[in-house]
Every structure is written in structure tokens, then in C-alpha cells.
Image (cartoon, rainbow, N blue to C red; front, side, top):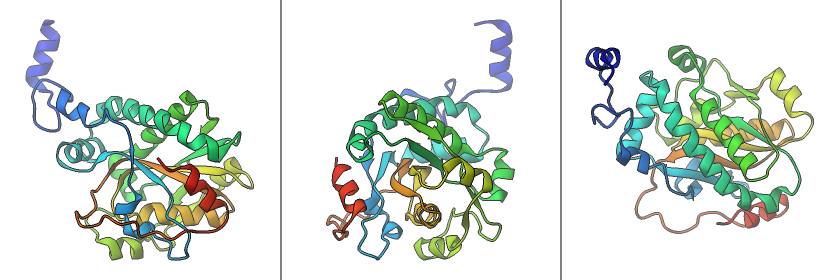
Length: 259
């Protein structure tokens, strides 16, 4: 090993978020992000709109458990910007796999990839918007699948909401009521009507994605799906589909997006 590099390793030891030393991420943690994305909206009760329109389809790359939780926490809140190089390519591969499923519903329409915004406090503490890294990768993955996609950071969080970490399902819904808004730049970029795909890091109750979907729909845009890095597993007993059929374009889109 080069002497300077060896000294740096002694002074600033490198470790995977799971604790394995001398690697930025270990093969085991990387393997959790190497599979195909799965539909995850069934385990997110706050995605249910309660208006007979099915929840927006959500694809998750992996369950939010064990080592994956450690990776996400270190990436978002412990300054591990280097983990971008693990998560970005994983999300790009996932989006490329989702792309062919989206094509029948999208036709030739271009897609706006919209990252879910952080609170102002979280953004200041982290010094950046980590989800934008995932959204950029999703945009690239959709391009790989032959879909015209563009990254549009169209939304912002109002100053009244607190961060969602640690809140239960009901509290998340109350916290996000009216807390997401379109930005002027986002409105100009999306135009009068755009087809949108949402991107977030973790799907828990679905309250955040539901609030983002409402903000975009109220501005006249169509949300056809969402992609997240990880999803909190639903309770083991939750096995039957709770959604009802709906009429119109969302029903047709939902049928096209079945995997």
C-alpha cells in the first residue's frame, strides 16, 4: 500500500456502515441493493386516497431492514457522501428494469422525475438534498430503458412541518397536511401538464408520497408511479389487496403497471 494512503487509513479508518473495516461498503451490504425492485405500496396505508382511486404504484429496491437501514442512516445523516457511488448505480439499474413496465402506460410521453423534498432543517443539517442523487440516477435509468426523462426538482416543503423520522402513521399524515408546495421554478419546468414519477429514499407509511402526489395533481400534473430505495416491510398478516378498482386513466395505468 502507498505510504500516504496507509497513513490516511490509520488516521481516518474506513468502514462499511455495518461495521466491517477497511471497506467503504462490504459485499453483503452491496448484495442487498443488487436485486430487482418490487411493488411496495400494499405496505403503506397512508397511500390509500380513500376516493376509490388505487394508491400510486411504488417500486422499492429492497426492504428497509438490518444492514440497509444502517447504510441509509450513514448516507443521509452521518456525512457518508461516498455512499452515493453505491446507491446511485443501484437506483439506475432499478429504474432501467422498471422502464419496460412503464412504456405501455406512457407511450411517447416524456416523464418528469420529481424528487421528494426534504424539510429546510434537514437540508441545512445535511448540507444537501440526498434524494436528488437517487432521482438523478432514476432519470439515467429511464433513459437506459429508452424513456425520455428529465429531472425536475419541482417541490419544496413549507416551514411548518417537522422531519418525519420517529413519527407514527397518523402523525406523519398530520405533519404533511399542506406541507408540500410547487416552486416557481418547478412550475415553469413542468409546464401546464406533465407525467411525473416520484423518487424518495424510504417508504414508511406513504404519507410523504401522498402529500407530494396531491401537490402535483392540484397543479394539474399526473403521477403514474414512484420509486424508492427501500420500503419498511408491512406487517406479516397483511396479505390481501386493500385497493378498490377505479375508473379512468389511473385504472388503465394501474393495469399497465402490474408486475
